[in-house]
Image (tube, rainbow, N blue to C red; front, side):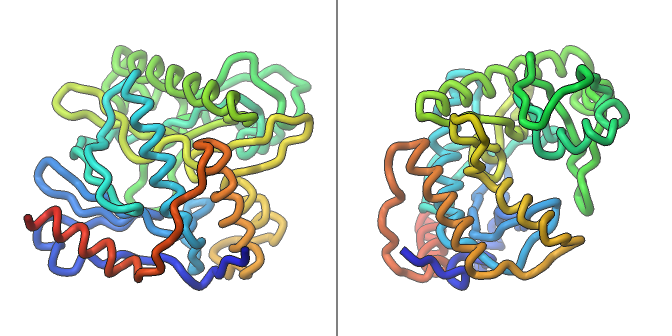
Length: 304
């Protein structure tokens, strides 16, 4: 089935609903925040290397939300999450949390940016980590590593060592709590993926607090936040890393146009990963304009 890169939800406009709170536009998500609640609309935008690209990836937002909802509900066995209710295939109601100003990436394999940093001898400088000499690309790590970064309001997030991350999250005790949660979440994701013939290579987690309670926020184990491979001798990418690798082959130093053929392949990979992970396809699209559909559903809920 051909998929056009020209259709999809690029930017969501909250319109009159914006008076109910404060709006925020992230790389992929458009948010409306009230006093203790939030609405998160997942668009079809695609970002890489902290840049947002002009083309949309059809049904990407639906894939991201469907997977995020599934894994957030599963994660409740480990840690409370911000998810409250699904309002639309692209929109969810969440609890508002105080965001912890660190992004946490846990890696089970030496690949992607970690491999590039390892080759360049930068893992110690960036993260305070030391790995054995002579490792090869895509090698499984004896123990997953955590590579934290800052959460910058503008510009690129910065790699930081765990000691600095611990200071930002509230000290050594808070770091120990967070690290235990991260490792449990990763193990849960690895187990789920393995049962479906996939390898969960690495993933990004975001956390916050509601009162004193640690809460999992944002997305979880989606192809935007996680890297998946088919479980076979040579890695086959099923996540956004395919797009990052394509950009590197183009020598892109910033935002470039994505050809339709590449956008179509990205979309198909997202849809394929959804089917593999959940054992079902997305429901058929009704063909409505997503802006009008989502706005009507949010208005019905927020203004009832």
